[in-house]
Image (cartoon, rainbow, N blue to C red; front, side, top):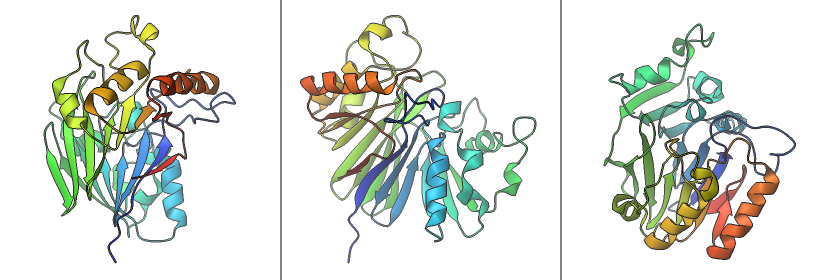
Length: 275
């Protein structure tokens, strides 16, 4: 029997730094990490601190783990969980890790440099899992299976970042985190997210805040709705919440957004979507 499961599970939804307090319990305080199950395949998008809890959950299943890990970019909040991902330390596990060359430094070297003194006491040499690195770039189309494809898009962000479109058995989700929008919607973005079932979008700021934070590399929930409507995307997930955006304010933003586009939700840790 063919496994047609296509699901998205959020492990980290916060931007910049973790934000763990009584005021962030409802939506969560870990930095970006998303689990996607597509048939027999496990995909992990970004490796922020949310990756730590995902790793613990995978280890509890007591099965060999095989996964594709896609890194949008290597700013701290998107790679902080890598040294603490428990499945990396078990030799039976296998990971294919995808990302970009940065400043002419090979992607594999960028990732391995996260684990060395004086920044971290455990080096990459202690990793026991079978890890393979793959360099990807803007416009790539990566076939993981006959009916599972990952496409990439350049995002406007300091030091560059990639967006991902995951397509599986006629369904799709788009991960557009860490992007600064343009005044007029970028045709490439609209084409990339067109008709997607789920758009996960960088909603770090409000339009009022963005006036004072141009050049920071992030977008707004209002712009997310605008793009969703123009591209005929079906569901919008507001993502990469500001570090100091507490639960009460996020709930208010979600309510405001739903008045404009009802199928909008603020991402929460533990939230699961089935396509």
